[in-house]
Structures are given as structure tokens and as C-alpha cells.
Image (cartoon, rainbow, N blue to C red; front, side, top):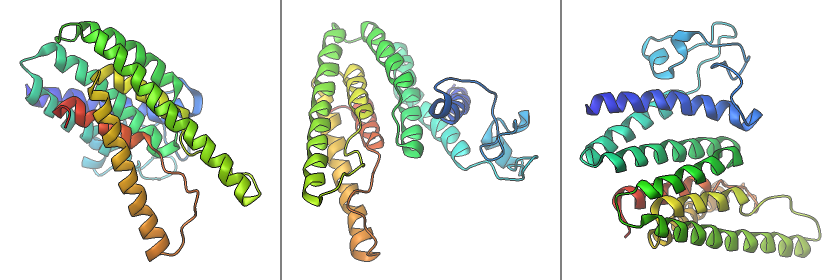
Length: 259
């Protein structure tokens, strides 16, 4: 059964790739899988990127461009995640289904934010609704109360960070004497914070956000060190997507508990 559940994850990974291709452009699904370079439809045999690479036919028949590695990586990553979920929660059917649904959402957010630096309303608002409905099905008694409180706190904490980021940009703009068009912290991250609170509840949302902030700080410091000290090509206002750190914090707390 673990193999079948992993196969389900792989197929859902195909869906994640399809959504990640189209939602940032059109905010809806319009087409079957297509080549991102020439935009011609992909053959049915290459809809699953993993199979295309295994068959040694990962190229577009129209323009010859290779299918991006993101496709098999997302498919195999989602398959591995679903195999892990089956191993951990096969005795708790409700948690298995809820965590599988949340994993798909988090994976979609991760892929889109890494590629486009966007966390889309068309993803987050339905995710809020699903998480709130799921809180009533959670096996922990009265979890919906913890979910509501967690969502409010997650939103409030990240909204505070968002406001501080706006203030920082304004102060730096005045200090430099010219406007800075970089965004220190996006409002999509605030909406993601609310979703994280809904799925992990209170007080676990505090652990998830703390871990995200810690990871973001460490990665930002490492990025600065490599670019500024080693490569000597650092730009002060380089945008780094924050969603992936929030996703990692949420998944860690969701699957392994608070720390």
C-alpha cells in the first residue's frame, strides 16, 4: 500500500506542476500540459516528467527544449512525501488524509514562490477554507478552536513583520535619497502564516514561525557571506522568497511536533 500511496503522490505532483505553470500566469487552469518554451502542447507520454526522463525522451517534439528538471523533482518529491505520510499515519486515516491535502498545498506554494516570488490568493483563500473545514475533522477534541487561534496569531505575527518590512524600506529610501522598489516581506507570506496557524493550531504555530524566521536568517546570512565576502557582488536589496522557509517550518511542526 505504501507504494500505491507513493504513486498517488507522484500523480498529484503532476497536478502541482500543471498548477505551478498556469496559476501565476492566468490565475486559473486553461490548458493541458504544454512546453514552457514554445508553448506547444506536450505529448501525452510526457505529461509525467519522471516517465519522460526514464524513457530518455524529455525533449519537446516541437522546439527540442528539454522538459525542466522541476517536473520530475516535484513528482518524485511528492511521491516520497506521500510514502512518508503513509508510513507515519496509516493507522490514523483522518490525519493521513488531512496531512496529505495540506502537503499538496504547501508543495504548490513552495514551487510557485521559488520560481515567481509569489504566494497567490487563488491558492491561499481556498486553502484557508479547506484548513478550517479540516480542523473540525481533526481527531484532537476541539481542535477547531486551536486552529482559529493559531490562524489569527499566524496572521498577526507575520502582518507585524510585513509592517516592519514596509517601515524598513521607507527609512532606507529616505536615507539613500531615492525610492527602493524591493519588497522586504510580501503580504502573501502573511496569508500563508494564517494557513499555517489553521493547520498546526496554537501554540504550535509559534514554533513553526520561529523555525521559519531562524532558517530565513541563517540562509540570508549565508547568502550575504557568499555574495559579499567571497564573490564581492552583493546587492543590498536582493529579494529572497520567504515562503519556502515558512513551508519548511510548517511541515516540520506538522509532521514532527513542536520543538
